[in-house]
Image (cartoon, rainbow, N blue to C red; front, side):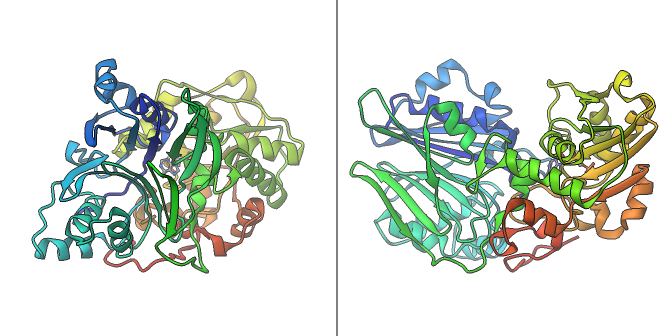
Length: 463
Ligand code: AMP
């Protein structure tokens, strides 16, 4: 069975005229979390209206679609899948008509025991439409005898292991659920509307709340089911608090937008601190600090301020090219670096340059960038990575390749330095990463850096 790894955005809007329009805007703010498909489902007179499609949010929705998506509640989803097979059946929100009415689900994360559950459900007679793990929750709900959606959700999500931040909408409720490890973010915001009542917004990242003019209230807690209905807001816990929580450190390293507050901490500040600690741990004499834009910029600012070495935008990015990782093939990926990044000879010629990036995965990007920086005239190139070496794949929703493609899993730092053709190479240490986050390993999942997976892996293979 193919594994669908999801890097997604979810959004929910409750009690707002033109709720679908807000959900659409929320997805716009979170487009970086997934560019392959987008969808919105609205709630109108106890029924659901849906629209979803393949492509970017701006390509998927027309003005006419948004007019058709009537109602005062809506959920939305933007999705990135990694298998190359990009099917509309896997686009979300997923919808179904159950015994008690319509249900729509949008999911961020990856359920690690999905194959086991899917097989069991198929043996029991469930017919699956697509191949993504989110559909499992629909089938578990469909089979649950309780007529109370919250009760059915509680029993269903207790069977899931792994990463899930869900927004779920029925004919009369908007529900948010976060797995008990807290892998993926999910936040609640509120704003006063024209009717002088509160509009509620649920979103993967606070940058969506900012765009919608909603005040950040709090995170949905790990193990919590939070819901809104005509009687107001409610909350229960489907699981007790774990002593080992597992917020994804990679959200802070790379994935989230820097202007978001994730797990209660500013992503921009974390990245700046990664750079500062990196400078403390790995000193090198140089003339300028140059970020790989945009992902390396906050860390380079931190590195420069800590080391006193001037910050320069020595590499300029073409903003009309998407992230290189959208391209599925290695050959296209390395070409993508050239389309996207242009080193400036006027800044780099004759200089000893420290190049900062947020992470090094396969090493292809760094190799290409160092080649371009040298060709632009740099005298020395010192690569500094604002995260520890990536040694393990992610099974919880970030697209990391299998172990054999992770260069640091089988090569020493010296070997990687040679491969990328740097004069020196250094990474942030694991201790430095946690110190910069003011966190302990007890609260975070850093399995991509230390191989310590917080859940069983079931049938998932490292390679
Ligand atoms: P590479 O070492 O060539 O595989 O790519 C490393 C680059 O990809 C870095 O510049 C990161 O900013 C970026 N990156 C790291 N992790 C991911 C990911 N999960 N998805 C997309 N891009 C990533």
